Each structure stands twice: as C-alpha cells, then as structure tokens.
Length: 558
Image (cartoon, rainbow, N blue to C red; front, side):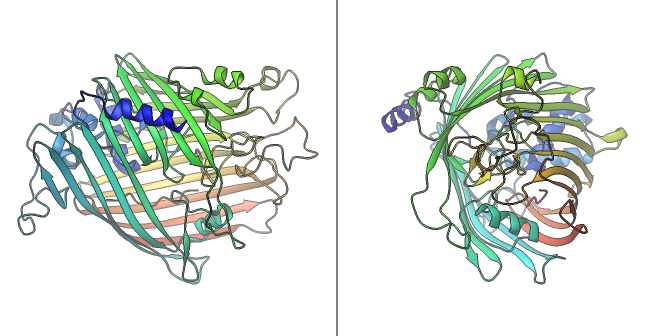
C-alpha cells in the first residue's frame, strides 16, 4: 500500500511538464458567500470551476472575478469585488491596489499581504493570523475567551508547484455547550487534540499544509492536511469541514461541462482518552476514506452531482482505482466496508435565486427502504438536504436570505463494524448533530455599507438523544450500530426516537472591516433547550466581542 501511494504521488508531483499552480482559499462561509452571490447575480454558472466541491483555487476565483461586469453592481458590491481581487491579486491581470503607507517600504506593500516576494521562480505570501475574543455565557460564572496567534504562508515555485502552510497556537475557554460537546467527544470540534488550560480552558496547536500541482491542462492534484466540503449549503450531509484536518490526496479533472474529483484520505479512527476524557499518548488507530464525485452542468443554470464513498478500517489498494464503482469493489472483498452513495444539485434562476440539495444513501435494502417488508427499518439510513438562496431580497441591495432543511434518519453514518462510522478524531465528518435529527436554518445577511455587515442565523433542531450511555438510539456516531439496540428491533425507528429533544438557536453578529481581512465582531447568541427529561427549558445567553486577522469567525450554531 505504501509503495502504491508513493508511486502515485511521484507520478503526479514529478510529472515532467506542469502548468501554473495555485493554493486554495480557506473555506470561510462569509468569504464564499460573496463568490456564491456574484455567480447567482450573473445568471449563468462561472466557467472557471464547479462550486459543489470546496475549497476553491485562488487562480480559478481570480478568473471568475475578471468576468464580472462591475458597471452594473452597487457601491457595496464594487467594494466586495475589489476586496476579492486584492486578496487574490497575484492571479489578477489588471492592476490591483497598493498600500498607501507600507511599513518600512517592505511590509504591507499590498493590502492583503504582510510580506510578499514575487519573481520568476518564487512567489511567497506571508500573513500573521490573530484571533482575540472575550465573552460572557449566562451558564458560566467566569469569562470565556480565545487567544490565537499564528502564521499562514502560501505561494509557488517555478509557477508549477503551489504550497500552503498554516500554524497557530490557541488558548480557549468555550461557551458552555461547546465545552460539553468537546468533553463528550474527547476532541475540540474542528481541531482534535487538546490539553487543559487553567481550570476551564483548552490549549491546542492548529496546523494545516499541502502542495498542489497542475498535472495537465485539465487535471490538478493536491496532497496534504486540510478539510474539504461538498455541497452548496450551510451544512453538508456528505462531507463537511467540521472535523479535524486530515491527510488526503485529491485529483480534480475538469473537461467540458464535467468536473470529476477523487479524494483518498487517512483518518483517525479513535483516540485514547485518560480517566477524565482528555486525549493521551499512543499510536491512534487509523481508517481510510475514499470518495469520488462527478459534477455535470446541464445548461448554464442547473448542476447535478453524483458521488460514492467508502469508509474502511484498513487500506485496500483496489479503492485507489479512480474510476471504479466502489460498491462492486466492496462486494469482491466480501462486503467488509461501509459504502455511501448519493446525489446533489443546484439550480440558479431569475438572476437572484438558487435551489440546492443533497441526498446521501448510507444503506439500501429494497423491501425495507420502500416499506414492503416493514416500516422504518434501522437499515433505512439516509441524509437529506433542501435549500434556497435569495439574493437582494425584494430588490433590497445586499440583503441576502438563505433557508435550509436537513435531516438524517437514526443510525445514518454509523456502522456495525469497528472504525467504519463517518467520523474523524471522534467528531462527525458530516453534520455536527450526527444523525437522528431534523433541522431548519434561516440566515439573513445584510451589508448596508462597504465595511459593515450584519448576520442573523436562526437554527431549530428536533432530535432524539440517548437515555444513557448503554443505549443507542441512532444519533451518536461514536456508537456501534448493533450495540445498545437490544429490544429495539429492526423496524419502527423514526427521527426523534429516544429522549425527544428540541433546540432553538438565535445568533446575531455585526462585523466591521478595519482594514483588509482585519475584522471587529460583536455578537449575541440565544439558546433554548427543551427535552422530555427536563423539568423546565435550559436557556443560555452568550455575548462576545472579538478582533480577528486573516481567520474566519467562530461558528457555534450546533
């Protein structure tokens, strides 16, 4: 297996003739919403990339930005487009902004870069990463905070091999519900390994890095540690950015109206925890994830994607065939692994709206799926997403609405074999809730002034919780699908089974851009939790103020 991977990597990265290469733009929902917004307003799909698989390459985004007719956009949109161009200036053909007052004539010569060097051989961009937050949670008698310091470096060598690396050190005291989530899973969401900091905090390093190369005119490759996201929604029912970064190799092929993406990844199957639930030393067990997705533009406004993935507790080189049907391979191996397949779509219409969705089928037994043998089988496992975006609501400039519905039946993403659940480092690879839930999300974004934006997110969860650690009602992906289900039977499993619970979340945030990629954020969150086993609702209020540079804002909507 190792020899195969080395030969595959060498064949790609030592290819004798390569084309210009680019790093990727970190998946930041605010940033990506701007790209999404201008494609929808343009009426037709951009010709540079498909949006169903994220993150995007910087050179592709730059190509798209240069197709936007700025003559017909508002003052705020003109500011946003200029911001995006400055952020990817090395790939923009037109002249972009220079800083009016660079530091010592060497630093911040460009608004987006603390330091850069660009010649015929090397292109390097260096930026500091800072995040300082302070907040109060009504459920805690102490202040919570975040203190992150780091560095991000991107660039290319010979314009043929791109690279990116990121490192930060973090001390955090989370709001109460995030603290509970991290302690239950033994992992910080999105980060993984942690150590205690003081009496209530977490300390951890965060690191990501990869190299990229353009194998041919139509095929690109990426290898390293990072996250991926599939879909057009706020959530993903297929592959999300919620878990810890993982090692992967990705091939992306774009031909005609098709985009075919192959991803192979090594994940942490489990973590050794000490007696109080902290990660401790040891060689953590691994598992292996393979996914391929084919996207097709049908016309200029409708895109459909089909995907197939497999989770295996040991590597098998047959899954590295990039154009094989995984389910057939799994059958030849004796059906030892978990295969999931499904589809996603988006439909842009009226130069202002988008409908999108996903369907992920985790297991399929014909008679049980259609209820012929019995209704609501525990093997009827699937996730569903439907969403809607409305740009410039009721013709109000820069007021955007997004509505989304997600659900996953009990036991979806769980598996009966060890280390085959859709998790990485004890956190879900898809939705933060896991399974056995319904969710409705409403997002309202408003940018009245170029540097000022408001964001409101409302989330409603209906889900079933386990009454105790020994019982598995199908929502906790850390549990085996066959364990803890004694007496529950094969049929009669419905969403919300177990301890019926409801969660209402309201999150308001105001952001002001002090300078390029430097934001001042103020926000307030409201959470109300009701459940069958609670005598009265649990209500928490959380207010926070933060300053961040070159990093996405925290998102606690789960």
